[in-house]
Length: 293
Image: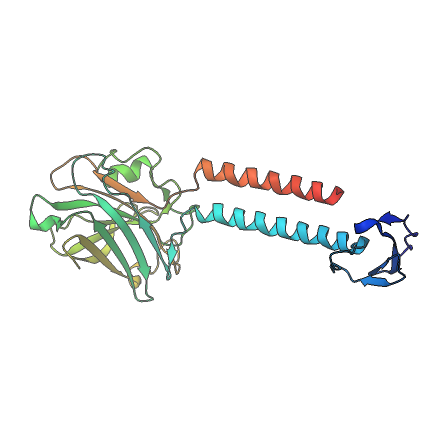
């Protein structure tokens, strides 16, 4: 490393002058007019009358670079937190806003799937009390739960596939509903013909849209419905069941031709993607500015 030549005399506080040079690759020497010498280590700041050497400013520059990088990383992390992370304890949990109805009928507030190694447990929570379709009441629920059993959108059918919509009872779900899923099966919530049962329907292969087995439909609370499907039911299917089963749901009132509410794992919104892009640009410019400082 080249030595730094002695700098010119500089006036210090009270009219005193100082000379400063480098004593080594990692030290700066400050000489007062009274003959005393002060050695400044990298990052060290001498007393009120001292002058930091070159290494001090290099150290401060590196520190600022590190702090800006850390700040940008934290900000980027904060933006990604805005994107819902649905995985919870080996399953999927989707919270749905209250009051976002498409038509009069049951209002979903939460859907969840949990693969416990023996059964696939699907839970639907509602804003008010509900009943299964077999009860024949005004608050009875019909509908479906889409199952992406391998959590792979490249297998199965897209959630808005016309044939899938027809098999599930119509075209009243929103456009592009569940396009991020590859629907391998769906569970039918209408147990009117067989109380306490949910038909599990396959969506692909030569037997597409036929029932492959039954799940158990139960009601764990007044405002919840639950479908429990043995994992053995999926044995021999077109795809293997993974530890996390992605889901979407559409529900309506018994006797209605319209879906009243849907819930699906959300995709990153455009505002979040824009935020990530802006932060990336700021990070690039900050590094260039600090690098040239």
